Length: 178
Image 1 (cartoon, rainbow, N blue to C red):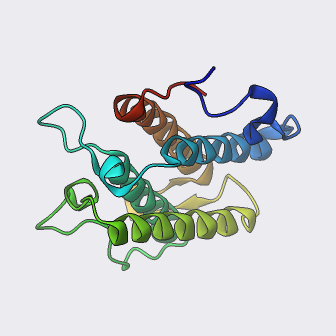
Image 2 (image 1 turned 30 degrees about the horizontal axis):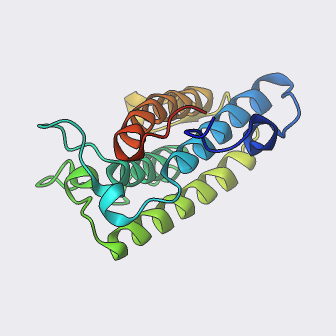
C-alpha cells in the first residue's frame, strides 16, 4: 500500500455515519468527492500541480483545482443564489478555458487557486445548508431546474474529475487509488 495515501482505517472520508435520506446522502457524497480531490493533490509542488497530461490536452491538477472552483462558484452563487450577473471565475469570452490555460507552475498561482477553491466550497456548503428543500427551482428563466439536479450534477462533476486527478497524480509520482 506504499503507493496510496493512508491505511483505510485512517481515511477521514470513511469516518462518517451512514447517511439517511436524500439530503444527507447527496451532501455526503459531494463532501466525499471534494475531500478525495484534495487528497489527490496533497504534497505536490507548483510544477507537479501544473504538469499537463497527454498533449494536446491542457488538463493538469492545478487546472482541475481552478475548474472546480469555477464550477462551485457558478452553481452556488450564480444558479442557486440567482446571482447570474457575477462574472465567471477563470473564464472570459476571449479565454473560455482560462481555468486550464492559466494553470502555470507558479507558487502564487497555486496558492490562489487553492484559496479560491476552498472559499467557493465553504460558500457552497453554507448555501446548501440553508436550503429548505431540494425541490426549490433555481437558475435563470427557461433553464431553471431543481436544486437536487444541481447537486447531483456537482457529484457527477467531482466523480469524473477525481478519476482524472487519479491518472494525473499517478503520472506525477506513481500514487494511485483511494
